[in-house]
Length: 165
Image (cartoon, rainbow, N blue to C red; front, side, top):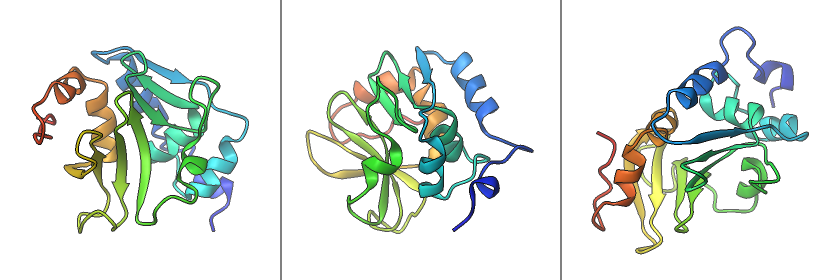
């Protein structure tokens, strides 16, 4: 296991880029302050803060997009009462839940359980309870979530997960 010092990237951290995306977003984006347990969350994930996943886990309590329509998990906050590490503890192996929506849908990074495209995101649609491949990675997902394409995604016809153009 890597130490906290090995996971915190002070040379090329991703958080300034995430803050820029949030500032330039088409939709309301709220970066919640990180929790006191953010170091434990990052250590549990074993992802550096050079990656958007590690940066969000360490530098935020989570992200509320479009007034909380979409919730991207971080280190936890009173307004997002779970952290990414605890939320995934004891869940199925082979994917990492990273976000959820008000409809009861979940977004997960495929670790091998959802298909051969490891590292790509999947959406568990509440109306079908089927995992849908989104054919994008986490970084692209975060960028996309801050745009009006998020609303288009939820206005789509069932079975059409295409909203990432």
